[in-house]
Length: 243
Image 1 (cartoon, one colour):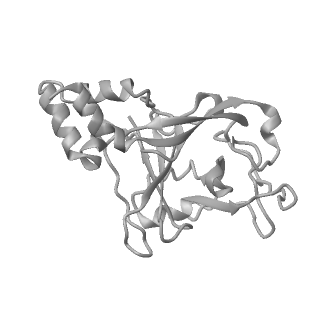
Image 2 (cartoon, one colour):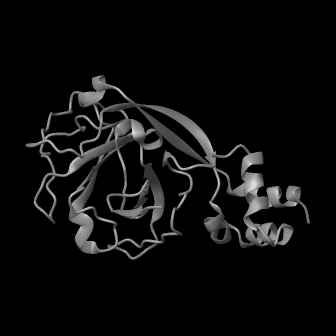
Image 3 (cartoon, rainbow, N blue to C red):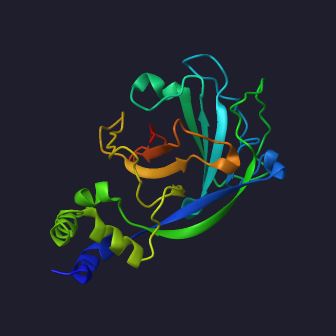
């Protein structure tokens, strides 16, 4: 039993994710077809600014993420007045994700929020990078019980330490960040949402971190986790967790 054997167990679990790092930039106020935080969201004919079903206020545009593998753009709106955690079905109208296939500037239209809010996100350009990701310590037992057991056997007093060492040895992302794909890094333990249409377990899609450059804060330095149904791609689930 060795750290090298643990590494061999872990390597098949490696996934690639896209990391998005925002940088405040007022030039990003205009709508675009690329990833960005704040400013004006991408929209197409027939779209209007979404309104919260809880309080009746307009939702806040948070971020849009470009999914290169599918040539699609996903636009997230959220209500900071109601501050949904994703715990009940009633909260679904308090946030919204709009997905667009092959968005173009020719189809892009301007939609405007009727009022401003102190919670508006600062416009940001984003730098994107490809990162390798492994499950967090909380998630490794689900992904590979053998890897979790071996890490615990290598250091019974600090069972997570050998696994954390392997994550670093393999050059994987080992911090909270805004990412698309890969594995979630949960703050308060695993989430396992089911699709409201078919009841099947949903797949992790993305996580949106608290980002200083965007003046975006989820409670006490928390994160938003987004899940998606493989059978019903328009069906998303949102969960918020805080430290």
